[in-house]
Image (cartoon, rainbow over all chains, first blue to last red):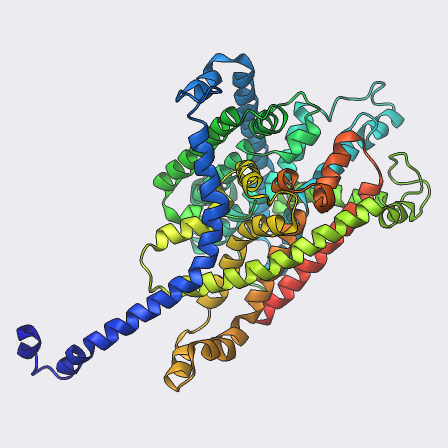
Length: 307
Length: 266
């Protein structure tokens, strides 16, 4: 009170002090109101995502006899089939991410350099597949790549090959199909970051006598790396947990992490083992995202899209 | 007369870049184009371009009770998901935008959790939970699961609408005596309605195209279109799926264009 009276000579302060209680009550009412608006959504997410995952985590800590044990996790190191699954998963993730960089970078670069209108038209080629069902696109690749598919029929009609190439139902098929699905996830954040590069920097470099390729290598490329990194992390993380394309295009030969989870839970009803796989997958995903966040700051991870 | 990238590099010097970019664009769009064309083929062989044309795969699609039922289930679930997700998502975005709460980090993490957590884990977890409370193979269960997946998109879309809206307008309305709700519905909502509609459209596509979670929690009478397609693709390549795929592609184009138009309406 003494503080309030001491500042009486400053105009308006005393009124503020008198109203403080009413204002505080109002602020509380306001924040209760916003909490009420948030709670339905938060509750739903909590009930459908957090609770089951916590439950699965709990389950993964017990073996078949109900004893607390690490056996569900130990088996990842002991059984060759699990190790093979992890190796396959990381191999696919690396190759697909590499292919996405190889194809995505030139496309994003071109989009960022085109005049507004042309870029808008070309962006449709990225956004439309992005919003087309994964199932539809996987089906399309099956039609194109399978034994009697379009590519093999064409090549055989042209006499280039006499035996159909093994393009689907194997590693190559999974990589091609997944690259197609992941590409927009790389191109969109990369394009956004390239758009924000100040063209004055490039113009200055060229004014100072740098050749176009030197300008690209020394100015544009380094400035585009954070955007590229965020695209790479998104694609890599999505690849690790990807299910639909490997399940349909792997021909049963390419077993990835998510497929393994589906098999252990649906086919063998081994919830403990499936849950442990899920826990490790989530841990790896969060660790990669966290590491990336730490390295590049919040700005880059902000560009996250669906699925 | 665009001066925006007036770098002293001619288009001719960039031909290689355009060629490369064009090839990648072709890679992205070709599968959809091929499927659309092949859906009008008259033969059950996979030929491109088709030798004869017909609508037989569309007749097979619309004539099949199984496909029709699955489509109806998917439409029902997608409509309900769009409604529920839009309501919850708009409310949440409004609350986040007001910034009167602490723990915004936790709240954002929760609301966008379904974008980050591997969807296969969500599928298994949801199945596990639903098995205990009897929600597997029900429309309610599907709508709840899809709503959780669509929620982040609605929140982000509406939030971006709210960011370009001056909240003081609502304050003015309230200081002039309007209640909370009438201030929102009469002042704020008309100005962010385009983002809300876009969010609803995104929620609809998200639900309609969702595969992995539906694979676990739908079945029997509530088999969704995507689940039935997935199973059909595991067995053999039925050209009927080309017709269904074409319908899905057209749906995506229509909804995306609508979202674009609404987005511009702001």
